[in-house]
Image (cartoon, rainbow, N blue to C red; front, top):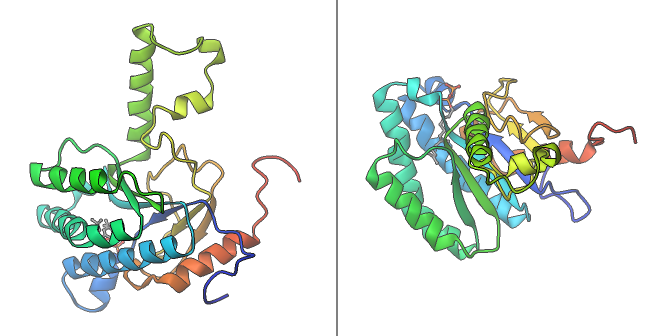
Amino acid sequence: MTGQPTALQAIPGHIALIMDGNGRWAENRSLPKFKGHEAGMDAMIRVVRHASDIGVKHLTVYAFSTENWKRSVGEVAGIFDLLLIYVNRELEELHRNGVRVDILGDRTPFSKKVNAALDKTIQKTKDNDGLRFHIALNYGGRADILMAAKDFAMTFAEGHLEKSLKDFDERDFARYLYTDGTPDPDLLIRPGGEKRLSNFLLWQIAYAELVFSDVLWPDFGPEDLDLAIGEYGARKRRFGGRI
Ligand code: FPP
């Protein structure tokens, strides 16, 4: 399947994306790794634009994981420099297209400059009603669940739990996660050839359809997104039931 998804085709309400393969893309071209991340940012811009055009409601991208701090200081700094370039350069276009941006993850270790740019982006786009673009930064699925559990325990210990423990269910717990207010992903796409989840949205992807692609992230384009959506559309989702 190529080209734009047809009107009849199911567009997933929420797509989660693991942007993998920047390093190998650069290596294949004998370029420094930073160039791979730069090309990865361009791919992200194209995919966000396309997702918005075809009516995806939520797109969550894994831009920096809690484990990515293990990379070299230079690489980490380069990724955050790109993030600044991205939010400063693309903010007007995102806003014009009605995109609403928010961040998932622990922002406390970020510099004042990065946090100020993120705040400005969130603030400026907060009333937009188009694509919800969630950028996972210093995010880890386990850290998300642990933070939620601690927050829940604190609420309970302080006697502020809104219902009895007996009636407290999965939906109630999900309100403590970074993704509070966002429906679970319907489709998770991982380009780059690896077939693992890498600690991304572990709670939230319980029933997501998984699509893996060998295309390295910087080469991933609108047509690859359409292919993944086509594959998603051909799946029968049963959510544990038998239909
Ligand atoms: C994984 O590729 C990618 C990352 C760790 C960073 C993702 C960053 C971007 C797409 C660009 C910047 C955008 C923002 C918003 C900061 P990898 O280096 O693990 O690739 P490899 O598996 O080939 O080594």
